[in-house]
Length: 225
Image 1 (cartoon, rainbow, N blue to C red):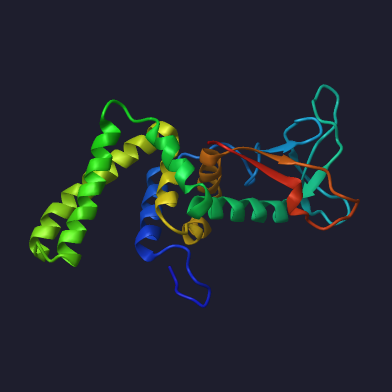
Image 2 (image 1 turned 45 degrees about the vertical axis):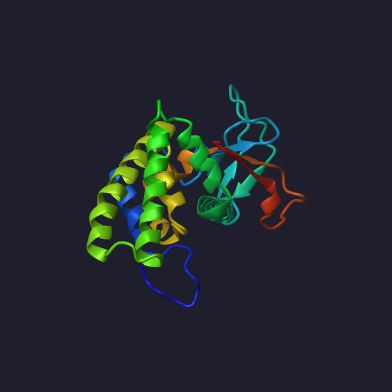
């Protein structure tokens, strides 16, 4: 991770946590391109297929009309801008707007008093930090001796909930502030797995006019919440 002029969304510790999560979940879904299988035509509901334009050979996702297939053939969208847009929306959502929803989805998978135990451990950890750093009631050695097993127990508990909810990678990203660097270093299969954990489908609407530049309003992401 390299420091630069642009403010980081992730701190180093949380970026490293996300890297570990990615390493633990190497199995990719099928697909040659980032959004293969995710994009849908708003006109007919068909899955958009990757094609090349005849004019400049640019890659695009299009609704294909063919005998025996569902597509209406009415729309297409250039691949690189829509992939960048979805990537940015996903990373922003994981780092902020969907954090609470992701946590709620995972906590719904808790069995019995499992969630109560996790929340109690988190409250204890918060109080422990208060007693050490603010009140000075306990020394550093005592603080570390209690903190480390508590953190391990909380981490294991949260990981179990995330696996049951189908969000093992996304939960690590949500716990962090910015998975941008991890995304950059991840290969295509891991990026597709991250998207698939949180996105049900992406609906593409027709362009406002023929030859129009990329229009973000054409893209509607259906989140798995």
